[in-house]
Image (tube, rainbow, N blue to C red; front, side):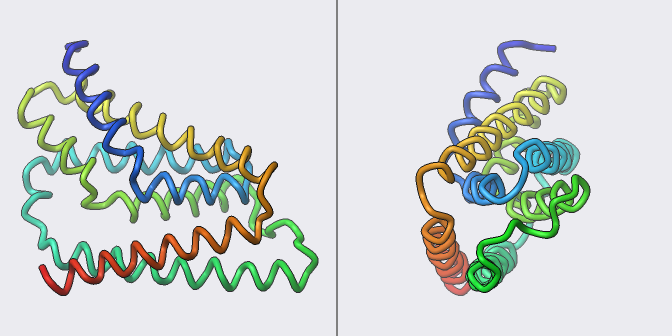
Length: 193
């Protein structure tokens, strides 16, 4: 394994993933569920996404941009509505803990959210491009996966710390607003091409 390629990939993917929507999703999941369960789903989803990037390579760049943005916009809109509906449900029941707190439910939900959010994402396309450029799939794959997991882990832990200082109601409202903004941006990009 080429350590230089690994380090370059890790650095590029880590920096590109920091402001990404996946970090927001991981942060929100981390405020609601056990961090280790969320991280397990996140790490598995990232492994699948990196694997797809390595295998698909340049084919990912050929996906119609409008379709990817349209689906992402719709999913963000659904996510925002679900957050707002879940908030009301918590208020009615005195802020009780979520029912779906088993490992498989939380890890599975985390896997699905992250896998969908990362599909066709900039970091996935960058991983495919790095794999094609360096012809070092192990170094690129491991570097990308560890970078994605690092950012996700920071977001999950940040979600736990955030909950200690900010009420859940405020977190849900801010996350729903952010998802509505991301939905609008994605849908606008899908329409304008």
